[in-house]
Image 1 (cartoon, rainbow, N blue to C red):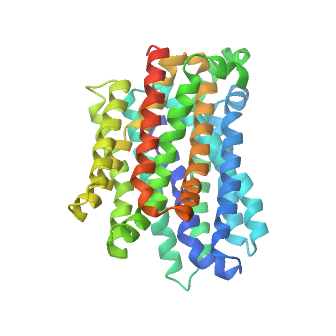
Image 2 (image 1 turned 90 degrees about the horizontal axis):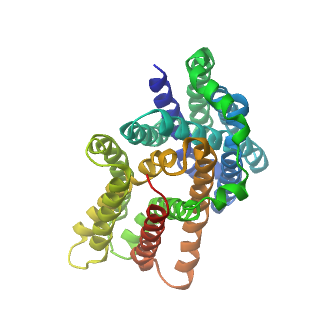
Length: 381
């Protein structure tokens, strides 16, 4: 029962992630700000997620995973209702603060709980649930926009889903009792950031997470532009295949849950890195546009096992007592990669050309391979 609730929580976590991008083409006109201003709101949300991720260990040890998840979900639900009522950029920016803080806490808390208490396959399926939520959010927003561009209704409907989950979480707090007791026993073992960084392998782990999320977010943001401007592919087809990158991740994580029955976390990550390399090789060839299109799907499939397998291996690599502190830093590294690397590629495009996209991704892949190799070398799963 608790595992089902955790799965629902991760679907709920993914639901709002694509709402801003889906609503912004209409929203920015109604509040009369430039199209580029969505980056301001995104940055505020990202900063909030980094802050709450870094503090997740102390919060969980004080309140327990169940209470923190419930209150954080309530916080994001209220933020979504705030978004639905906003009619100015300032209002959106203010509501972005609680949204980021709530989302980061949920992400770090549930990832650590599943890594400690469940098998690797459940971590893969957990992140598959996030993908389902991330794909469903735009569908909800599209339905709202079809009714007189009513983006407010899209945010309100997702807020209602979050509020429903909040009620369920508060009603089932007793299911988290065993976890809470364990966290209370370890309440005096919370680590400072300096202590976390001093643990062998943590810096390499941070590099791997940074690069993974840099790759995922860069592909999501720039793949369609590369297909259109560098490969001359029709914009509609490019958008369709760029979206298949995320479908590849979601389907791949569902499949990874079964593969983990045969392969451990380290082998799963190496498998994913190898598949990404194959996908990027297809992006580089100049013989067939079809290969380039499917290369993106293969890159998505390769990304699928990396993030959940890395998280699941954390308690065994760094110890259960340290895992929440380390996972908080992992989440922060991931959000920083999400935030910085896609805009940095945009700067490169201004000076060079969007055709750099596959080479940029290759550099990120090489750094990710080096980071994971160093992590495995310095830790023992």
